[in-house]
Image 1 (cartoon, rainbow, N blue to C red):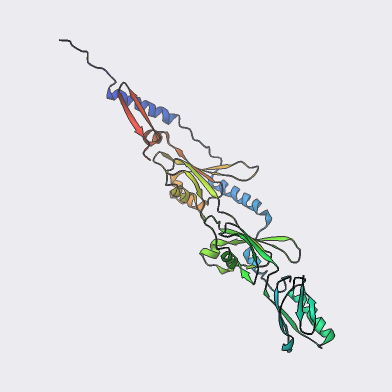
Image 2 (image 1 turned 60 degrees about the vertical axis):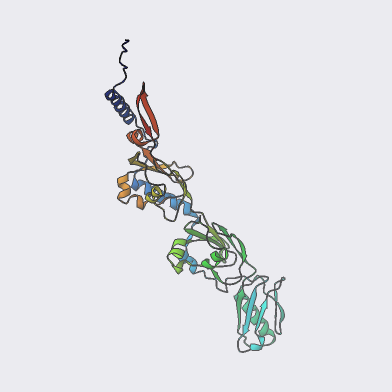
Length: 347
């Protein structure tokens, strides 16, 4: 009979000791991927400064644009426009005529009158003078533009059917958005209307809050559109959400999306996240460094994350806890001579 020496190995207590030593080592060596550069108050102040700099193009609020309604006196007549000419107390001279390709209209008694490049008010004065010189003592003429064809409007950006369209008659912003089959699913919350000032000849930008107009029905934002206007609806932008979240990736920024909503969209924090180290990284513009704001889960629960709206190119990065990664993270195996413990990513 042959006696065998008992098989020897690492005791369970020693295996546990190895695990605890490794855990302590990982925890002690924890290093954040991004170091905070600012606090909430400074971050918001810097962002407002950048926003003011970016708005040097001086986009006017729509309340100012409403004052520039599409009055007949502002529109310059051109080929294809349909006008109604009325002569007070002389109905026989009334006419509805279209401007010819050469810029003329044919009127009773006057035959061809050149009205191209005139405003409605200037055309009224011209026709009055012609009738006064030849036929009437004190004529009173009214010119009403029934169809605006000579000028077009251009719709670009996040619309279902962007393009250039004839400006047939008076339109407001909702009308022309409907012409383009509405906004697409990437549309942002702002529209810009660019037009040429009839007096200075310089381009002027107006800014319209689409959330106020479409979601809240604020018709004060439904500004009048003129022939020659360019309407631009930018896309909402994207944010990159990464780190210790359940569904990292690139997400379209919905209207007024906050940091808290962004994290929720990414499935929430992973079980191995460092709840005290959630970073918001923001691009501040050319020549500026990115600002890194550190938030905690307590900040998010307390409403701080609800007060910070995400911007295009924002990055939300949830740092990992070393101990959390060890217990619940990417997974590894530790063992020796058949004795060990396996860890797997629970996601």
